[in-house]
Each structure stands twice: as structure tokens, then as C-alpha cells.
Figure 1 (cartoon, helix red, strand yellow):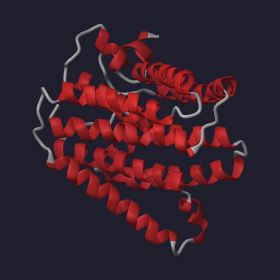
Figure 2: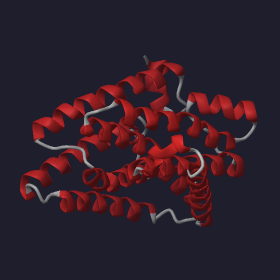
Figure 3: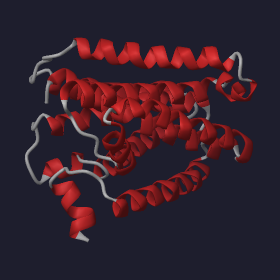
Length: 264
């Protein structure tokens, strides 16, 4: 228990095979549970709700950097380390959603998004105490992620099987993961940071460069997105699954980018 689950959190070390599989299963169960909760609340995960949830992804990512910058002491800092931070952010997000839904009824989207935006701004205000040492890193990551995403769109014009990328939500997911790959590449190859996840770590060690993250992301992401569109008929379940994929790409991308820019 301590070796596989507690120590990686307490010491903020790399993932292992056991906790990687465990948290993947927990994520799948969480998505199924959310579907039931949404039905209970009379909600459906449409594109508008997904976009309104974006500020909470930014809030969670910036909150994780607060721990990286040592602005929170133990034991509270453990709540800000993956995977515990995912549970923390989920409960806060769910609470904001329920409150805004009850107060503003059908027109709750703006207030729900505004709560997340305020949370994000508070986190960034706390991080401003640290100061940005490498702000140009943000530009480099943005340009790399945008360049790869644009190149894939060009390829899509030739490869008809990639027509699922015409879906705006699918492309948002792809773009988020290209930003994540860019942040990993910049961090590992330019500034000697290290990757925590099992499979990427193995491939980076094997190839000697985190540039492997770009083909790895595409190798996994493109078939998965195609399968989701073809296999999941329930719109709410389909969009919620896509939101989870979007979060898994954008959250580490924002966290890595902020951490690199702050030099922590």
C-alpha cells in the first residue's frame, strides 16, 4: 500500500505500474458515476458545459503549481499532488456546478464558468509572488503545440479517415495533447526535468529524447477519438469521455508550462 500508493504522493515521485493501472480504473469508474449524477441533476454534458468547465481545468493546473512552488506546507500540500488533487478539484467543481445550477437554473453556464475563472485568477495571484524566470518558455510551448496541430490538420486534408478531426471538440483534445507533448519535450530536453509516467519514461529513456511524446500521443489519441465517435452512442457519455481526455492533455500542459516559466 505505502510503496505503490502513499510514497509516490508523500514524496511526489514517479508513477509505478500498480498505481497507474489503479488510477486508470478509477477514472473509468468516475466517468460512469458522473453520468448517473448528471442524470440525477437533469444535466447533459454538451459542448457548452464542456467549455464552461475549462476554467476549472486551468484552476486545477495552477493549483498544482502552487505545490510545486512550495507555497503550501505539509500535510495540506499532499492534497495538491496527483492523484489527490483530481479528487479535490472534482469536488470543488461539482459544488460550483450544483450551486450555480440551483441559483441560476437554466442560465447557469456563465456563473459556473465565472466561479472557475475567479479561482484561477486567485491561484495566479498567489503564483505571482514567485515571479516568472523564463516567460519565453510559454511562447515556445505554444508555438510547438500549435505547429504540430496545424501540420496534422494539413495531413487530414489528404487522409480521409481523419475526418473525425473536423469535430471541434476532437480537435480541441488533439491540440491540448500537442501542448502537453510540447511542454514535456521542452522540460525534459531543454531544462533536464523528468517525466513521471511509466510508459513515457520508458520511451524517453529508450529514444533519448522527449520528442517521442508527439508520435506517442498521436498513436494513442487518434484511434481512441475515432473509436469514441463510432462506439459511444449516448451523447452525454461521449462528451464526458472526451472532456476527461481533454483534461488529461490540457491539465499537465498548463502545469508543466507554468512550472517551467516560474523555474520551479
